[in-house]
Structures are given as C-alpha cells and as structure tokens.
Image 1 (cartoon, helix red, strand yellow):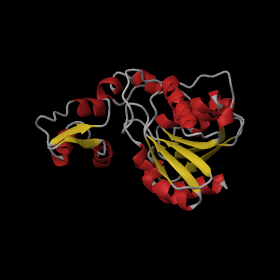
Image 2 (image 1 turned 180 degrees about the horizontal axis):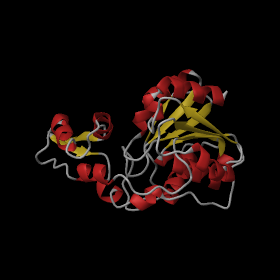
Image 3 (image 1 turned 90 degrees about the horizontal axis):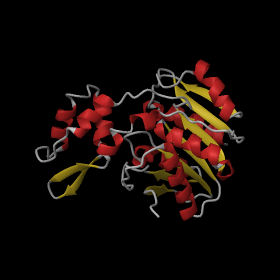
Image 4 (image 1 turned 120 degrees about the vertical axis):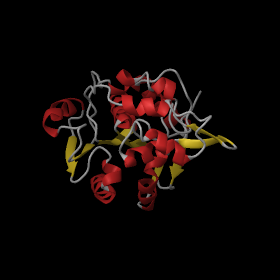
Length: 257
C-alpha cells in the first residue's frame, strides 16, 4: 500500500491536511504550516501522487487522489481532520468531502470551483518536458531554458522548486512529467457527485483570479456544499496564499475559530 509523502508540522490536537495545486508540492505551504502550528494545529503538508516526494503512477485522476488521501488518514490513524486544498488540491478535497464527509470537520477550498476547466498548461508542460538534464546542470541554466516557454519570473521560480539533485552533478524533476502532460482532461474534470457535504465550508478566491467567478460558480458550490461561505481576497490572483499571505492566513484562521 503506497502512502503519500508528507511533512508534518506541529503537535496540536487538531489535524489539518493541506493539498497543493498542480505542479506544486506540500512544502509550498511550509510558512503557513509553521504559523498554523503556533496556533495549536498539527499540519500535514501532503505531496499528491506524481508530485514532490510521493510515488509516481500512470493513474492520475481525482478518484485515485481521493483514495490516496483516504489511505493516508487510515495509515496515520486520523479519524477526523480539517481539509484545505488549493486549485487541483481543492478538487481532490471536494471529491473527498463528498465521498467521505464523516472524516472532515471543516473544509477550505482555495481558488477553485467544482466546474470543468479547459486544459491550459500546455506551454508550461512543454517547457518542463524539454529540460535536458544531460546538458542542464544548474538552476540558472534551467531557468534560462524555461524562459523560452514561461515569461513570468515568479511562475518559473515556483516550477523550479521541483528541481533536485538525483545524484552528484545530476539534476532531475520531482514531477512525473510524462504522465502529467497527458492528464490535462483529468486535471480539469468537474466534480460530480450525488452527495452533498453538510459541514462548514469556506471558499476563498482571489480578486483577480480567472479560475473563480463568485456569481456563476455560486450555484454549483451551494449544490454540493450548502453551508459554504464564499470570501474574496483583495489584490490576489490564483496564488492567493502566496500573493496575499497575511490576508489569507487571517481570513483562514478567523473562520476556523
């Protein structure tokens, strides 16, 4: 039985699971985890399959990722948790809450809705898959190569966090690019369920995000999450937790009280 890799921060009685977005990893949330730990939470920063230090698999869809989380909770003896997911991680979290609602005390979804999203990571995945680590042997060289595909410097820095030394002098990526680049439809898939999640739910979205429309998305959100509260973070886009970290943290922790 393969168990997701996790960085566990804190030792409080309340366990909070965080699921990262596409092409990310649990450690992207390390600063928030440390601050949550100071408030008495034990925070589990999970790496979803084909990401970070977790196992690779040819199977990559929300059903599989939901079951990964179920196995993780069972493995660690966690009966009930608070679950937070961003983007792809938010889709996993929604799917899990609708299937295993008795395991979730509260649910937080960051900048994603249950709807279908058309594939839109082609250029990024093309850049990552073209990294030739026989020739590229430094972060600087990898950044220069990616600049041909991804113009935004912050996005490149986010992606380059996946670089690691496979062996002495040999770089590699922690991402399973061959599988991920063929999973565009699976990543964008809508959440479909006959169930509803009856516990408190918070949807946070960035003011400038093109992933979330509070007007048109409200109906489907309330269909599945009737107790959902939808709040906007001013001055943020899709990466709301990184772009406005203090506002994000304050809104999250005030809601959790």
